[in-house]
Length: 255
Image (tube, rainbow, N blue to C red; front, side, top):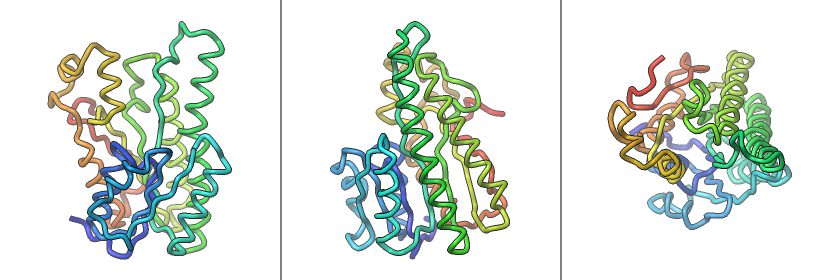
């Protein structure tokens, strides 16, 4: 287990799936964890159930609202005066954004997806970069998707793929612009991870068995695989990996 003693980590979308695994594993590694949630406080609390009360804080924010997004960073930073690692994880995937939808539905899906998955994270990344520049550096981990590289199977979710490509490019720009400022930036591109989102995807594709048939390992990527990878990156022990996109998909997509 990586040693994250004394590090303060902010994780968005920490109430379920990948975010919950990252929060739990970071907490077990000794970090002070700020778990952001939208509406599922119980999920965030469950994720950090084994972490001592003095090393966890829960912050609610609706990422549809940019003012709430700014307050999220403010409240997170006030807790310990510093954020060492920001994990940009929270995202939504809508299933009704296909070509055959009416204009109003198409526009609504794209607007909401870009708001939650790109505009709100952009605000938080900007806050993180400013904070890190003022404090001698820091770490940014962005959860993208293999959909950012290869597109998605279901065209109805193309807004999601586009949003994940956007945050990937944003993180890469931070990496290139601030490598000499001790700001380490990593992108993780998961494949089909065993989360509620993936279960919904499987249902849209004809069931779990059909999805597994197309995966090299024939199984979901366990969320803990992502959590353990983030915990390692949060140590800062692989500085020259900054800017890299790390594929985690069980050998299904290799580039």
